[in-house]
Image (cartoon, rainbow, N blue to C red; front, side):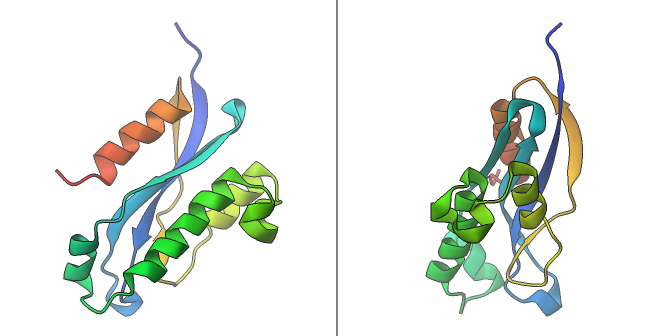
Length: 129
């Protein structure tokens, strides 16, 4: 039987009106230390987001979501946060915040392949049916 590895993930959400607490799941961030894996997978559906907020600055939302992806990849292109270690970047990305872009609580699990698990969670929790 293949070895299973501990992973953690959070759902990335767009919350156009923080005070109303309505959100749309737009991505997944998954971290698996044993596989040295930290990656975000996201999809922004402008028409669905406009249902929550017709005045949404879609370009701004795209820019913010892309910054999550850059931070996951790390390096100097991701700014000062991108220079942190992988676990520090994951903790920074999943820290509680009250902005338009938020994450769910962090959830643990076991997987054989982190990338496959990321795809599965993305399909289950983000992709529209």
